Image (cartoon, rainbow, N blue to C red; front, side, top):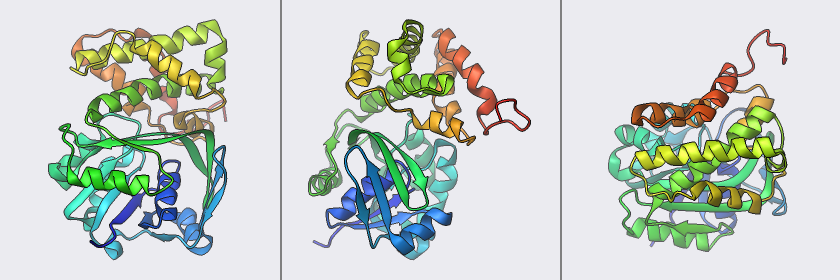
Length: 315
């Protein structure tokens, strides 16, 4: 059997470390990137630094032209949530009859948004547990030591392609779980990231601040409770004590980090707010579930959706 070909769409805080781990495991990995980041990867490779150590992937295969790559076996799909449809169209030359595309993003609807573009049978579900960002062209900085990849078929089956991907991860430095409950796993991540992203963005502080201050801690717990209630109303099996479980998980990871949405806010970049905090508000409204605290924080952050507003007193 030939070695599987893997494309990493986006060499940022998720795609960079995950793709590098697979490449270091000896697998055929190509990064789809752009701009100065792409140029740096092509010329000097990809550097990943952080709490898990530092490594330098060089040479690294990278391009901005999916057609030059051709059909691959797996696509790890990691663009920002506002770019799902456009990027889905962009990568179609890499999607052959047997290609599996695994969106690995913070929201809960990327797979549903990709199905009409790529075909339902091509799309799986994926969840990343990692906090990292592009520090500069060709350089990724990981904040915190946690790094895990959960994936699976959306119908809960265990397919040969899923088992093969698990074997690829096991042969690399990429901790991975093949899940038969990937929808629940997506919601588990969603509840966690909506809480942590919303609070670290709203406070512009490490998550530690939301652990140590009683009022912020209550706000974080309430946002996660509201997201949990929305998930339950959508038919997802989530226990009533799920916010407590998510808080325990957050504290177990340490609090000296910020979510990617907070990092984008601090850099004046566009935010994934509509697909995270805003999605809870939207679904809560549809399902008749009150989300007053999440709604208030969404409104507070809303002026920054498209980046720091021109003429803003915050600069």
